[in-house]
Image (spheres, protein in one colour):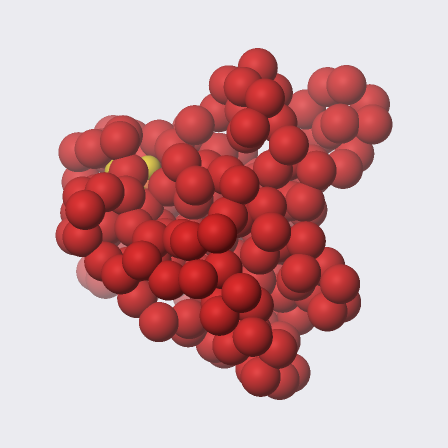
Amino acid sequence: MKIRLAAYLQPDSIVDGEGIRTVVWTQGCPHHCPGCHNASTWDFNEGALVDVEDVISELKKIKNQDGITLSGGDPVCQSDACYEISKAAHEMGLNVWCYTGYTYETMLSNPKMRRLLDQIDVLVDGKFVQEEKSYDIYFRGSRNQRIIDVPKSLEQQKIVLVEKYMKDKDYNETYQKPDYLFI
Ligand code: SF4
């Protein structure tokens, strides 16, 4: 099985989910959100087509990671390949975060996307909405997006959010947000 990637695997990310993560940058996204910072990943004919087995072999070589993050592009457009990579990641003891422009509800109603949910621990769902963009939120670009605990949501048959990351960032007394950087 092949997967179209936008870039090499990126280890040691601390901004694409909790802990230290290897990002799998998938190529191709149908959502075309205004203000997307990754427009070069939209085209489904760009990037490089690689064997899923090769991606898994490369992942095995990367040490000291907490998990992988499926990003892009929209990884859910390549559900079967992402399922295999995520399953292998779990077998390596890594957790799986996934970013998508689709909603959790849409994924539930599509058999291929639904299958992928079985291998995702945390889903950051929904399109990027420029009017709701914020620098004060964790691991999301805009406030409409949700950080969803997928196993709990599937088990309880309702959306269970990762509440600690749905709160605004806590700028404490020792670190004050310099307003001039955020205008
Ligand atoms: S879903 Fe993500 S990658 Fe796709 S256009 Fe929107 S922000 Fe960009």
